[in-house]
Structures are given as structure tokens and as C-alpha cells.
Amino acid sequence: MRWSRRYIHISFLLTVGVLAYVMLFSDNSVIENYKYQMEIDKLRTEIKECTDSILYYENLNRRLRTDPATMERIVREQYHMQRTNEDIYIVD
Image 1 (cartoon, rainbow, N blue to C red):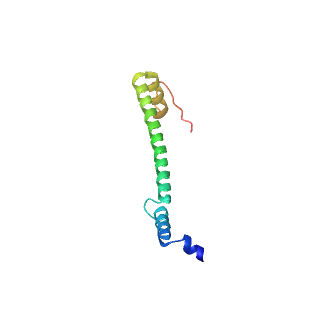
Image 2: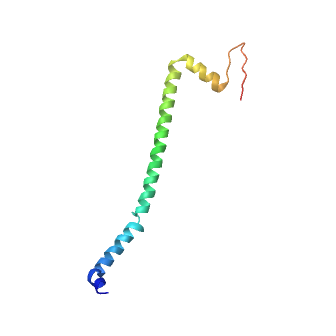
Image 3: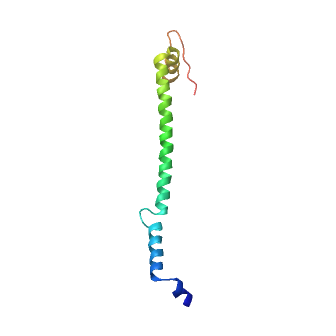
């Protein structure tokens, strides 16, 4: 018991208690920081997906403005349009 009085003081216990509270139970705890980091990673992934979609549609828009063959292909595939004297068969 003498060793506990020699090495463990009230200030040490108080310091350990405050550090445990700050690390585990406060708003800036380790657990909260982990949750925030996971949310940040998820949002960065979503931003990358949206950026890729934006680039795809900007490229498609540019091709539709400049290339009539691309416009005709898109119109025929997506809107099922046809030329006169032409039959269209849709297979699902």
C-alpha cells in the first residue's frame, strides 16, 4: 500500500480522469473524430462520382452540339425516333 501513496497522487488521478473524459466522452472524442472522418470520406467519394458525371455530360453535350451523327444516334436510341419509311422494333 505504501507504493500506491508514493506513486499515485490526487493530481495524477485528476489528470488521468480529465484525459479520459476528453478522449472518450467530449464533443472532440476519438469516437466522434472517427465518425466525422468516415463522413468526410463518404462525401469525398460522392463528390468524385458527381464530378465524373458532370464531365461525362459536358463531353456528351459538346459532342451533341458538334457532331450530327452522335445526335442522330442518341435520338434514335433514347427517344425511339425514326426516319420516314423506316420501321423500329424495340427489344427488351
